[in-house]
Length: 333
Image (cartoon, rainbow, N blue to C red; front, side):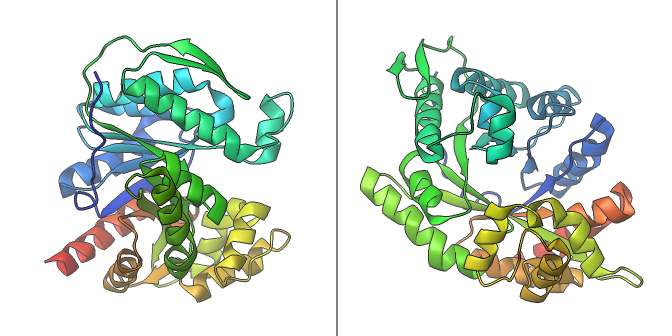
């Protein structure tokens, strides 16, 4: 059954992502239980090709976890839009909670590893992909013979909680497309000022062109509590290193005023810390900085403890998140 797309701008301001590819459900479960105990917030996962992202969510649902969930983002080359719609609906049905199905095109080398060739027109691919998913999830009979996908199908009827479609966004052209076809723009490691000055206007332009509401913005933000003997620059390097070695991420950062280059991730990590894109300090200082993202137009700030998780393990990461969530709660009070 089709459901109206929810507007959750005021429901979950602060959320959490488990940012690694887990090898057991026990690695993700403490994050889920933290949010369940906190009483608000969404659990996000990125693309995992160790344990599949959707199956992790299903396992959590089977353990009685009932919290909103989101993928930020799964990668389009891995599945056809029909299968992506089935996976998204399955997660929502099993969890019994709203779901954000965030999709991204992936980097060209990943595309080329799975497809005959990398996407020549990634924007056109994602336009088709999300449009087909939306039609299927709305219960439509979808007949489409496009440049990239062919579909003649309808999903079997199933009553599920609302599903939002997200699009991974780093730069203005993809942001404009998100405005046209997505419910959520999912950004990663994006400076707050860059979101306000560059991405939000592009989102609004796309939405106005399509005659629809501007998508809400979800931003993944690296965080680490400053503690004795914790080297924040090293923590940033461990947490953000893979993205700091990618041209499309470092190009976005430079557009946002952060001097990061793919051939020098060490310097890029230091620049992230200096610019406050890697947010460190006391829990209260971090909470204040995360509120700045909200003031710049971000609807949902997702705390990413990847650096601490990589350098000090699961317990240290959960402790950081617990303290930051408590600090955020004090600000909201």
